[in-house]
Image 1 (tube, one colour):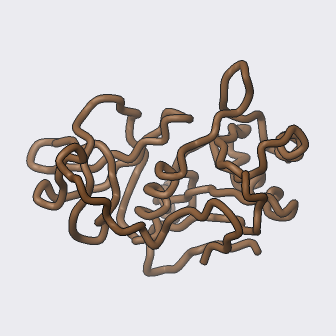
Image 2 (cartoon, rainbow, N blue to C red; image 1 turned 60 degrees about the horizontal axis):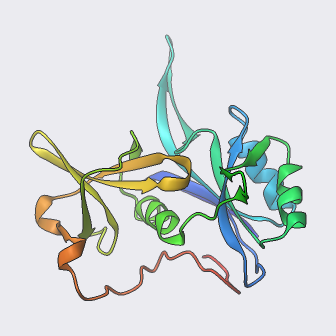
Length: 209
């Protein structure tokens, strides 16, 4: 099933392809040609390959008009969920617009499900977000109340404002979203495991709503 979640009342949306993958499937980052992310996503869908392409609405201005268009949250990248087989990787590489998997000399490296889950949760909950320079430092925090409860990320301050930074290590890209300092606490000080997010990425025999 090919699903596009988009509504006029929600400024954020994404494209996601779902099916029932092999139980040993993993999520991988895939690089694409410039401005070919959507083309690749549509083709992946027609091939029955599970994928995740987070999109955001962006206002573009021309001399005579303004228009809101959907653009990739991580330009040049999307994510696929496939079995750990050479055949599955080859099927993805053959998709028009796809350049290659993100990995090392040993091959594609799996992307932690928790990182994609956090990105998807922010978009699904309709909170404004935007690309942010990739960060390695900062305090690791978990949101303990509000619409983003349960999401972990890096906490930063910008003047009187504070933000939560969600990073996808594999492609070195990050997303920022506003959060109140009173709504977060350091992960190291949180002993109890919070309930699983209702937006969690399934890892086997699944169907995403």
